Length: 94
Image (tube, rainbow, N blue to C red; front, side, top):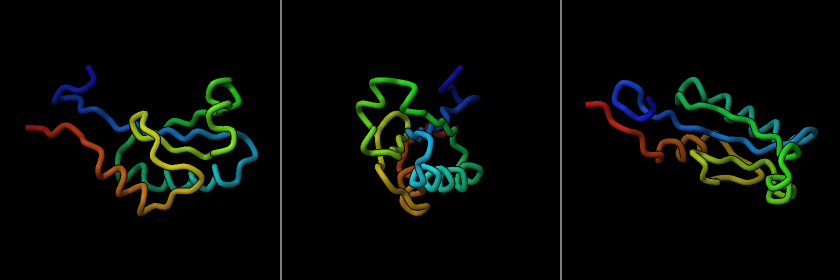
């Protein structure tokens, strides 16, 4: 069960991307470099597989969302991503 004290909610970082996108590859490296340290789930979403995502993001990739909320477009650094993930509320264990 998601969200109880035995199974805290895991933060989800989503990268909206497409093939042949150098900025997307750079953003993915930044995300993956922090994944083990910060313990979030990483999801990659190819915008060319969804018409609505393609229309929304085709000129703005990479786009990075945290728990479904768009946080970065085009570029992200480790410090910015770490700060954004640090500000994400997580349930506290008793």
